[in-house]
Structure formats: structure tokens, C-alpha cells
Length: 162
Length: 162
DNA sequence: TTCCATGCAAATGATTTGCAAACAG
DNA sequence: CTGTTTGCAAATCATTTGCATGGAA
Image (tube, rainbow over all chains, first blue to last red; front, side, top):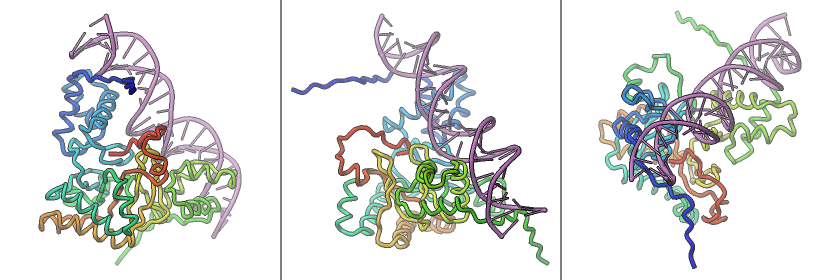
């Protein structure tokens, strides 16, 4: 006899604020953190609170509607595009950019096979089975900082850089 | 005429605590955070304070004696091996393991060429010049959690996982 | 009605920092 | 001596959480 105990039956209800937060995340390409989204939305959604942004971002992540790109300067940065793809983190200003690979799925496959071929065969099979997802961050200068020139001071490098 | 203004002439002085911290970091393979190092050292170095661990870890990073692997559950994890190489982050317990590739340098080269071949030629040249380093994190089950079986509950997945 | 969603503020946790004392060169 | 390193505690900063209220089904 199988007893399914539905202890946590979390039915989602509709919410305008939730929609707004997800909307911003899907529209922008800055890979924002919670505070950025909050600032962006505050004017148009007066009653909004920062805690709500945090709560919903975590919901989105659990539901697979959003992905975490990584931590930059201690702040978690999100992506409305959930398909795994590579990112560039600017070592000067901390901006996060998409790296426009032709086909993200192909890119991920090739990543996986680079890993596979770098491992011994035994270890290879072991690892293959265990790995769920990859996160590839490249560190360098974003397009803006590139233009500004390497000498421009002012911004500190992200403290999360290697 | 060249004038070198040595505004910040930070001469490093010798310190037993500093040595101890770096020593632990070089000896272990757990890719520890500051607290772990502190706990490890506290018995043998009674006067040690957590702030000192933080301060020295940051020094090591600036000097290239240590590298930041990434953030797991909000905690920064360090590596005494500074040569760039791939890591596995356990999605159950948050452990960080080295992935034993045959030759890290070769692996990094291949990563770079996967990226290069996924970009258009123009974009390729642009990106090549800009990227300083890569950080590749793989998420899955660490060796211990693999053995323990997928059913074992108890640990939450790292909240920094994608 | 009945839960879910939210605002608000307090709580948490990791990391940083200010300051005076201890210490290395 | 002089400047660096440290302990300690307070300060920061991002994120989470408790609780009472508002809102959706």
C-alpha cells in the first residue's frame, strides 16, 4: 500500500507583483540582482517591497522560470533565460553579459565532451552520470569597459573574481 | 623622464598566523571557507581571530597565492591551487571537489577553443582578447553523497546552484 | 472562507572595518 | 622606532523570516 502524504500542497495563486518581477527579469539582459529589480519596479509598482522580490526570485528558481548566474560582489545575479549558456563577468564593473554562442545546446554538449576527454575512461563514466548542470563563467572586460579603455579607474573588480 | 610614485608601499611583514592560514589552505583539498580554516586552526593557534583569516585570505588572493572557487551557500570557497581547473559542487551537501582532469592547462585551452568555435569569427577575435580567466563549475553529487545514495535526505542543495 | 502573497521590520550570516595594542624588521 | 598585523567588537550588506494584513480562488 502506498500512501502519498501531500504535506506541502503549495498551490500558486496569481499575483500582479509576481508577474511584474518575472516580466522585468525576462525583458532585461543585465542579469540583475534583487535590488536592481526592486529599483526598476518601485516607480510603477508603489507598494512593492524588497522582500517580495527576494521571495519571488526564489520561487522562480525553484520552478525553473529563472536561473542563478552566479554571485558578483556578494550579490546573486539572475537570468530569465534558463537554458544553460556561458556568461561574461566584467572584472572592472561587475556587469554580467551573455556570450552569444551560436547554439547554447551545442556549446554545452561540447563542454561536456571536453570534460569527458580530459578524464580517464573509468572516471569519465562516473562523472558523466553525476553531473546535472554546468556553469561556465568567463571573466574579462564587458563591452562598455572595453570601450572605456583599460586605464579608466573607478570601479573595483568583482570581489568574487578568481 | 619616468617618475614612479610608490604611493602605497605595502611591505609585507612576516607573520606566523599568516603562514598557518596559507599552510592549511595548501594542505587541504576541501576548498574551505574562512570559517572552516578558522575552526581548523583555532586549537593549535589559540590567539587566532576570524577577522585575521578573512584579511589574509584576501591578501593571498591579491597576491595570487590563492584562488576563489566560487560561492556555495553564501560562503566564499578558496583553493590553494591557483592554476585554473574545473570543480564539482555537490548539489546535496555543498562540498567542492577538484575534477581530476589529466592536464588542467590543456583542459583550459580546449575550453577556450570550444568557446571560440561557438562564436562567429568577428566576435571571436573580440572575445579572445578580453577574457582573462575562466571558471567552470559542474554541479552534481560529490563522491560521498553518491555513495550515500540519492534518497538520503538531510542536506539542502546549495542555494547558489543554478 | 481559506490559504497564499505581501509589507514591514527584525533576525541572520558572511564579510569588512575602526581602533588600540602587539609585533616584525 | 615605524609601519604592519592582529584581536575585538561594531558596522555593513545581502538575504531570510515572523507576523499581521490584504488578496485571489
